Image (cartoon, rainbow, N blue to C red; front, side, top):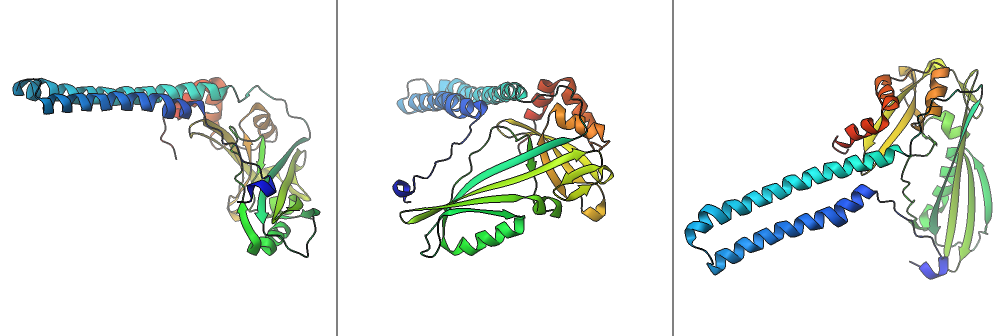
Length: 292
């Protein structure tokens, strides 16, 4: 829609090596072999190339056996490809021990685009807002004219830090830079969401809010979804805080060092210790778990 007038960017999708090899190499090869086996059996049967006893006693069971063997071989190939992908993914994570300082800062900037029908009374330019609710109100005012949202490009691995919206401390701390540009019959809105936190001596600082470390806990999550993803999720600790997630971090030595320095408990510490001991082996074990 209006591709020439807006010059909108097409998103690039990341496809892991495992998925490419499985979909474009292994699957066609095994499908072709299975199809060839079925066609050979049909030709032999329809053409009566062999005595009936041979068809009943040899060709039929042999064809079924070949199909079962191909299925088993495909399953083994898929597992080996998952293992290879897990080994590749392990290279993207750094669990080298980290000595945390007194102040450790994380910043996040997320950019996405949306397209609207133009309004005669609005002008191009940049608007800066503070707080998630102000951003939501701004976008809702433009919603009746929405044409489409651009697909966000898929990133191969988690960001070092990603805030989780839905808790006041994060929502109030977020800053938004909105840039409007009208070209032809389409208005493009570029939204940049900025959010930062700081681990300091007195607690986790998010904007003007300081959260004591006694209110926090963390959990490690490792899962395989065509590639291995490993994150550390930071939560509120107490039931009165509803155990809401605050932020996600890529599993690495830095975040682990920070959490350990300030005594923030990891509820599945054994998994972290296992990953620190042998990351490739840990990733390969999760590659066998069914995808969620």
